[in-house]
Length: 264
Image (cartoon, rainbow, N blue to C red; front, side, top):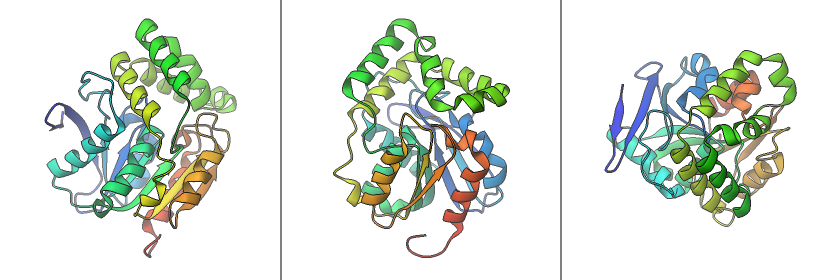
């Protein structure tokens, strides 16, 4: 399996699509792996060289001692690009991946053509909520939180109509490493980027889910209102819009990434 070797960790990554196409990095949400982007691979690999990776603490990547800071996860992306000799890329992150993306668009704007921030916020949740989540996982493993998380990730209607896809998502969540999950919970808990959004200097698209209780549309609109020139799209989904509303998700993002002009 391909791994990028960092000073203190290894990151698993996977390539899809033609080698000479523009690179598009996909960054997973808390509790998932690069496999969450399966609904995007066929369509996006027609146009892009896809780089999916497992965030530190997730999947096949190293579970280093926590808690993590979001800045560490941001630096991991830059070191992954450096190691693969990628000068510039597009970036698409969901939830925690979106938090990583908004900082990348601030501190390393020269490395990115365009950024897509999906189902995310400049600040997500409260200190008490995250600390309770961390304690639950440390004491009871992933199954202690998986049911409640799944309820936020996919609407009841989607879960009823798509039991196989729902089962796959639940299995991915339940197989997450509890220590890595808790360490990344801390990174999300401690991030508050509401006062820094004007630093994002990359053309940005914000995607929100109309039925997302974790990062509701108001969170997405806040991002779009405070990132210069950002575009906003709301999809009929809960938190995992790339799965629940995959066709609309793919269409919106492809249109944005393939559009011309300084701000998409």
